[in-house]
Structure formats: structure tokens, C-alpha cells
Image 1 (cartoon, rainbow, N blue to C red):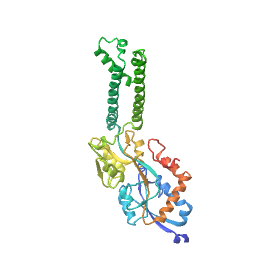
Image 2: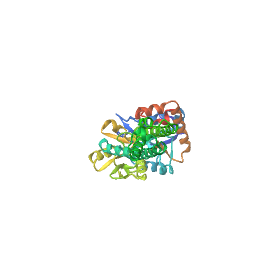
Image 3: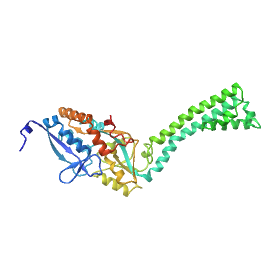
Image 4: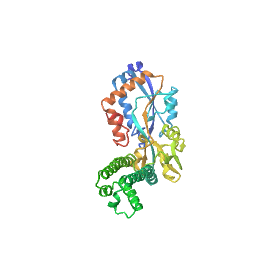
Length: 364
């Protein structure tokens, strides 16, 4: 029997994006007409919030299986065909001009998924690119320290047993450079036992220690912050194309940043993956938000996800004329965030990996 109170409720037309369980953001159809998935589970929780049940009745329309043209959906919401879209919709400047977005639900890293063998060379190039400047600094500063030793403590010539000034000069240069690599024995052992000699040795060791500490920290930062098997944002801009969905905000973001994207129309995520795996010599990889493509990492151990291209806010688009509904759904989201529901759902579907800040907004 129909609830008489339904006549007093506002009808909300929701567009639900459905697809396979290889997509982390869409609703996955199970047996019968039931679904699961992060967005779907959260949507159900929001509908169960008491004041949402009192005010609204939700009418769901479902996408074609594997739907990827999110920009088309956003346009439909802007035109009033739907009131809200349920999936992982990325915030872009173009979309924010025509629709409103709910509170941010996930922080979605921009990723390029690709085979490991195609990334190792890129990673090696990245390390060389990042460290070559440091090596140049080490050598140049070592030479400066060599001059300080040569002119600041000329009595060292006796300690070094150099036969002439040329040999003494070259030994001073090598000692200065060696000190920048942490070898300070020659500096201390060959210092003349005078106030001036000890002062020069102390200055050289102090400078060497300070810069060596900085350089070691920089090396550690490079090795820790850059994941193994990762493309970097510079090398990915040249050479082969990266496959991306037409109408996908993240692919457009990469293209605007200079990445060569081949936009594919009417392709599912699985079809994008299949096309890449069949043509790894033709394409560098395929672009997806981490939340959308992370299931592939466990299904295909040979795949890795390159990050380092930034993160994008993800939420649900809402028709900009429906301010009251937007305020209510944001209040419901705030309640579910406060009681830990969103955190629990986020970790359930996306894990709790430190290198991917997907759920970081809800971990406080």
C-alpha cells in the first residue's frame, strides 16, 4: 500500500552509474536487482537518514552497463533531467560552472595504469634526472673546499707528503671532493697542528657535514616519495599516447597538463584495459582515477598505477537549482562522516593505503 506521506515528499530523480566490479566507483549489480559499491552503499545510508526519509522520495534511473561519459551525465543534471548523479564524479572547473557538488566524498589520485616493464626505464630516468644536479653540486662544492684547504692551510703540504705544489693542489682538490662524499679522514689527519690549520679543517668538515646531511635527505625524499615503477609528469608528456575515456574529467585534466591522450568513445574500463594490454608497444597506458581502476591492481599483478599527477575531489553532482536538497544531503553526509560510516565504507572499498589519500578526508 502506498504511503500517503509520499505525496508530501519532494521527488528526487537520481541517475545511478552501474558497471562491473572492476570499477571501484560504480554500483555493481548482484543477483536480482540488488547492488553494492562505495557510492551505492553510501547512497542507501543517506536515504536512511531520518530527515532525508521524511523529506524526499528517490526515483532511480540506471545507466547502461559500463557507462563512462560522465560529462554527458553532468550536462543532463544541469538541464534538469536528473537531480543528482551517484558515482565517483570528479570536480572540474567546467562542471562546477553548470552544477553544484556535494561535500567531497573521496580524494581521488589521477593515475596512469600500465605494465611494470614499461615503467622501470621511466623510473630510472626519473632518479637520474632528480639526482644529476645533486652530483654536480657535490663536485663543485668539493672543489671549493679543496681551494679552502689549499690556500687556507698551506702547511698541509708536509702532512700530505706531496713532492711539489701541483701534487699538493691536486690532493687538496681530491680531499675536498672526498669530504663531500663523507670521507673526512684526510681533512682531519692532514691538518697542520696550528690554530689556523685546525680552524680550516673545522670549517671544511662543518660545511661538508651540513651539505651532506641535506643531500642525503634529498636522496631519501626522492626514493620514498616516488613509487617504484612510476611514470613522472615530465616523461609521460612525450612519445606514445595514453588511452582515456571521452567525457572523463580526469583524462581531460591530464590532456590540459600536456599528456598526449587518445580519447576513446563508448568504451568501458575493461575494454580500455584490453585495448592497452593488446597494444603495449603502441600506448603508454590507460588513464583512470585511482578509485575507478584500483581493482585491476590485484587482478593483474603485472599492472602498476603511476601517481604524481595530482589529486581531484570526487563527489556527486546536484542540479544547481535545488539548493535545499543540496544542503540536506550535505548535512546527511556530515552526520555519516561524524559517526564513522563514510570512513568505514571508504576503507572497505578502497583500502587504507598511505600512498593513496583516497579516504584521508574521513580519517580524522
